[in-house]
Image (cartoon, rainbow, N blue to C red; front, side, top):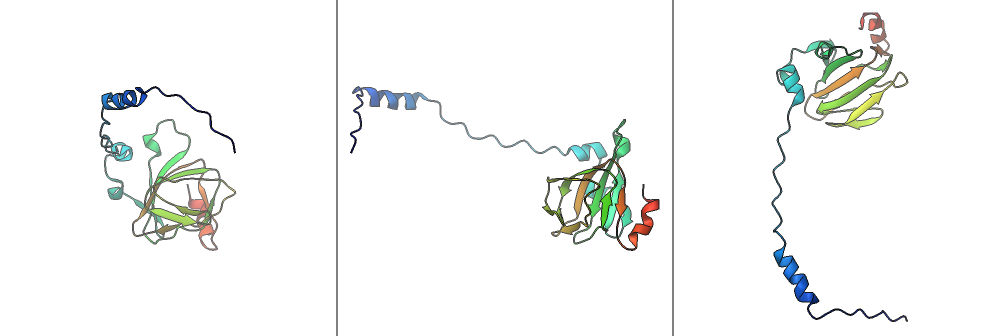
Length: 161
């Protein structure tokens, strides 16, 4: 068994440590977090739940806000899926980047909750379902329109912008 080396400590070391602790400033209470600024509400001028939504298909409503981003090449849309509602099966003709602003939805890739991001391409087909008791509201940036893939809904593709 190895013997630990001895360390010499002066007799005043303990008193010196205690004095230093006593002279340290007291910890400051944590500041309250700043209230979250609703940037989207400022941009739109009203609460997202009270927007002039346009019913798209079934349980899905949309609001195109591309015009609020001058020079933007991609389409910028808010989408609302009613609580428990289903979106039609679709894929994308380009890319879609989405952030969940309220509620949650599930699809073949998993469950996406508030503040989750989802990036989809033309290789992804999905059929989102709103989960939970509140409407799911998302903000999406699309490089091209969606492409409906359901048996009957695909007949609507020529009319989708």
